[in-house]
Each structure stands twice: as C-alpha cells, then as structure tokens.
Length: 239
Image (spheres, rainbow, N blue to C red):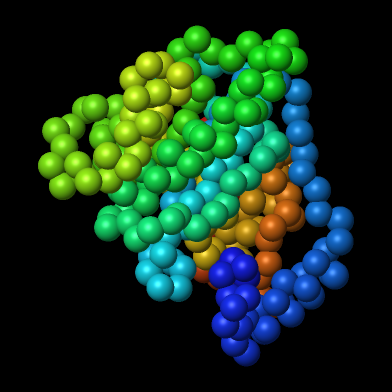
C-alpha cells in the first residue's frame, strides 16, 4: 500500500499496516542496494498495476538501472542495483490495463531524460539505437511501436502521443519481455513471502535489490512457498 493515498482518510487498517512497516524497519535496519560496475547505459523496466488503488486508480513503477551495452535484439538488460525507482499514482482513470501500461511507459520516459542528459555530460554516451525500455504488456508495446491498427486505443493514444513519437525517432527502444523478467512489478503489486525471499536470495547470487522496500507479515514458510522458491530461484534473472 502507498500510505500517502490514505493520509486524508486513515483507518485502523492503515495504522496496522504502518506499524507492520515500522516493525520491519526496526528488525531489519541494514537494508542495502548492491551496485555492479557497468558501461553506464541507462535502462528502464516499466510496469503498471491496474485498479489496485482506492477509487479504481492505477499505480505505475519504473526501475532505472545502469547496465552494459547490449548487441542483441531485443536488448539484454544485465541485473544491477537501481539508481532510481519511480512509483506514483497514474492521474485519471485508465480504461484498460494496456492504457495503464502505456501511461507508465510515458511517465517513465519523461523521468529518464534528465538522467540521460547527465550521463552524456559526464562522458557516458548512450546507445544510438535508443535507451532500452522493457515492458511485459504486448498491447502497449504494439501500440507504441505502431505494429497494430488503433481503434479503441485512439483516445489514450492522443494523451500519450509524445512517447510514441520519440520511440519512432529512435530515442527509446521499447521491447517486450515476459512478466517473469519484469522487476518493476515488485513495486506495484502485492507478493507472498516466498517472492520477497526470492528477491533477497537472488540479490546474493546476482546482486540487485536486497531488503529495500520489503515488508511482510510474520509467518512460517509453507510448503507452497518452498516450492515457489525451488521453481523460481534459478533462471529468474536473464543472463
């Protein structure tokens, strides 16, 4: 839950969740993010959660990492610690999940421009084929890369035409990847304990995010959680 959405009308549930978060921060004070050396190429992982907030609102998250130059197509984003994470409520009321994902890509790309300019000024040129953006929504990907004929999507295409334009110009390289490879959903959706443990375990084998921004209820690891870890801990991250 994003507590800022509940500040005007808090409930007992809000207080309970705030205490849960405070308990976690007290018991795990040494949260850290591990960074690996890279070619300083900015990459974005975009994800939106449709209708997860009060009043039928949607949340977006974009993970910004620095990775190596990729020669493959689609690009390979090497896991690394995030230099920035954008998490915010999407203004308005998206009419579909694809519209929410399109809005998320739009907001993430806007946030990226100051970082791109800073990297270039510091002597780290970015790829001529465009800054990679990864999404797991094929409808948003096909709309923004002009691979489908628009009909019902025409209304929200007018709102987010800017991102479609700069993708066409080659400033961003939008590509699709399966949801298993989208780290952005860690910040947009509710996950079981096993998934949080998976992120922590994976951070040691291929460092990325450790305990940062993790909070779960205290309960034992059930057999289902154990099976989840066994099936996902290997091969979770792209090589």
